[in-house]
Image 1 (cartoon, rainbow, N blue to C red):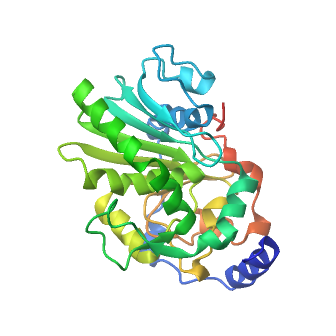
Image 2: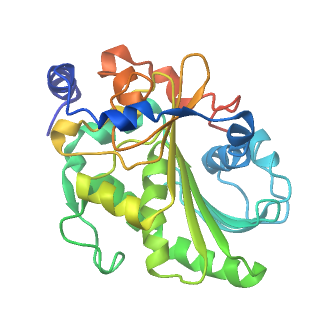
Length: 298
């Protein structure tokens, strides 16, 4: 098993020498989001935070300020135990016109352990859950196992919610480990449900799979991953281990600009890989936010 001390030493040595830069044109196309674009994420940021709170599936949807911020939300189902199985929930948001699927994250110390233990070895996706996905696509074993734990229950709840509300859109959200699970759900659910559109919005997302996985996500998912300032989680697992981020990065800079960073692992200093070249230059406290004033948690 790769210990945290060994991992960090190797990560620093490898990441310090730099990596293949993205195309210059992509560096030059980094753009700042407008206030309206930033604010459009607010409801989904609250939804991602809500997953930490094991929300009730009764009509008295109440689990703290973040979930109460989306007061019109109509829950369908929830599950998990917050330990061996991450909390999750499914319901419908009339104001967003979308089914919402939320997955619980974890604190920085716990996800660092998951990222550095033996489960960081990549494996193919389960062909029963992900029929037709090429064998070249490989993902973090721990993340794949976490997604598989809730996959069938989430799928059933999404189908029920679509039927109950006549929904045509599904949005999957999550922070940290929840982002990794949401990212996998974002390609899993469309393989089993047709006739609706899917979108995934993640926060503080680690790398989930190999470059072939990143390319598959780009081609089969509408995915946005937002990272905050000097958060170290988005630069793990290291690229030297064969991991790559999918496109769709939005990086919150130190001056609170939200910057759209094209490509995979954009190495500009305006984006997470360039801004945090190794974990010793990062700040674990940035992992929970704030994301436009919203901190993850109950």
